[in-house]
Length: 317
Image 1 (cartoon, one colour):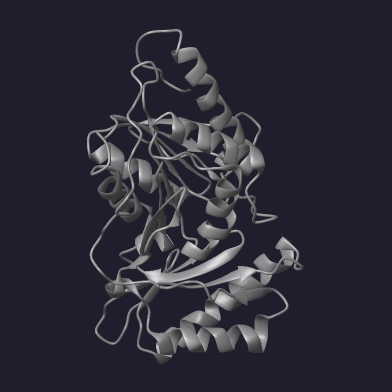
Image 2 (cartoon, rainbow, N blue to C red; image 1 turned 135 degrees about the horizontal axis):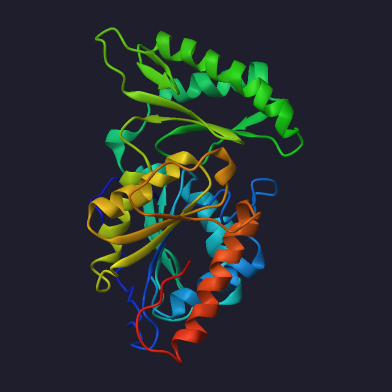
């Protein structure tokens, strides 16, 4: 069951020591897009296999996503368990953009932790659920698995074009609901403060969903929690790669760069625009979404074999 207890780890989790012949890099991965297909919402078997290979080599792997812990358990952890997670390997999942988190090993999932200060009011969630049922059920569904944010997602039987057209109307209706709860919110360039002039919430549209969340959550908060989870289990790698498909995912690399770490960001949907950053931004040519993510991870795995025969650090480009 979820808990709001302080950050903790799986009590029996042990990290594999890094092999000197295999320089360790950390991976901080968004899930929708680079790992899970935005069309099928599933993770290709090749990605599961490569993640297990890299984790077995001692690379810390953390999923940093807006998805719920339920999604990670069913679409990422369970396929890994079916293949076989090696003893000593620990994966971490930062969910709901830092609002919840848990770790998992070959023994399954540990306790799910929830930051209650970031959770949206239950009465507001109930009103959004009613809004979806009354006006938008043909396009989207209310995500019942979220523990801290409120989310809706495109139905699998709706076209993305129809969903995106309806999404804008839905998001505008959300502002009306927020007004009724005196909740100040922003969406892109629009800002509607509450009665005290404050904006405490964000309406965040993506290509297949809308997340309604505290302004305090984000991929940078997820990156901070990721380092808190990795550090007790192993020496923190100096080199990291972050992978994402939206402009907000760059916040992962921003945070790691600010901590003095060597980071590059892998953008699997660069057509949305690549911002000017003080670190390297990598792409996978014409590939996008999970195909680009799979190509990047495959090169990481290939580098393991190469580095076993060569000396010095490896840099994946």
